[in-house]
Length: 118
Image (cartoon, rainbow, N blue to C red; front, side, top):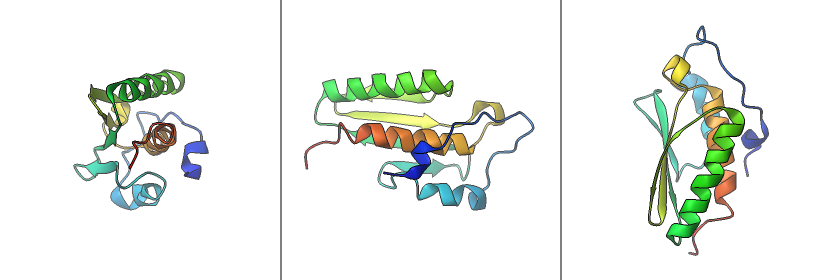
């Protein structure tokens, strides 16, 4: 999986600006294109993960919740049978920061253990 997932989650300051499309574009290669999309040009990431059942979706939700607590970077998470939707952005700057992409890449890595049977 992506080396982006191995990079540190670095907090931004309120002096930082949200990433522009040119600035975040290189990070798109580090996250799953079939899961994530940038919404409102640079405001937030939305991800959609699929699962074989509710239990796997629930366990994945728990794992990404633990990740969020460890990194103190909390997404919006919606759990349903066989799917989990995630919205990620940096609240302090009301937009995207590199950390959002690092977190997305880490979620992609976690999902590898839960990917549905094709």
